[in-house]
Image 1 (cartoon, rainbow, N blue to C red):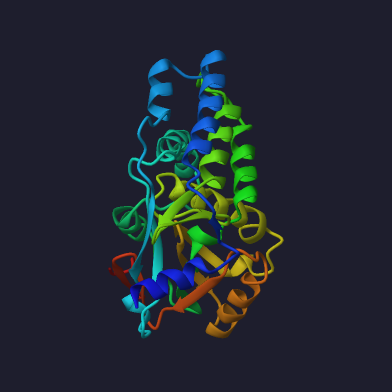
Image 2 (image 1 turned 135 degrees about the horizontal axis):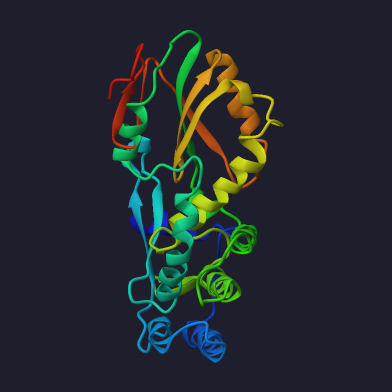
Length: 293
């Protein structure tokens, strides 16, 4: 049953492509080229160069965690790639160090449950025609388009003041390599991830957050959104969104239907409070005054 679910996921040729051989040596040459370029241009130190090179890398491997909360039999699997010690993981870690400040400046950013509680303590909830609602982005990590995500990162790196000796061009090259050459092994076969990124890669959450942030700014939290006046709160933890909606349940349902027409890679499922919603590890209940948790 476990192997069958793994193979079901890997048979999705929109997300994965089977390889004929282990690509490690080819990727090692690509990394060597970039690291040499970085050293020659004084973009990185010798210590950083040594960090980016893996002399004896481990092969990343694919596994799944069963989504038992979906109440399906057999339960669907959540794909994860263990990349600890793999050839691309140092690139992922290095890039994430530069991307994290951008993530933390996202206007809708929620860091964790403590951050959610702090936010809720500042709100007063008037139940008059307002709804608590949560959205979940379906399979976010595996659905973000790779090239479009790199374009988002490129736009961010090209803006504002840059206070590092490391060139934005170099970081973008590393990110592109780590994202588009991401491979793994399952059952003695090698696969390349051709869409999205994988849970298990250090910079996967940052990439996902920044791609969705771009979508929010361009399509949702804009005056061009016909529903913008109904959105009284929109805060997000990676792929989980907390909303205070001013309007009826029917209007909220119509909004979600509209939302799902905007981007072929991002699909949302909604839960409306009646009178409570689950968000992260909290149960948030509607009441007048500051929400109870």
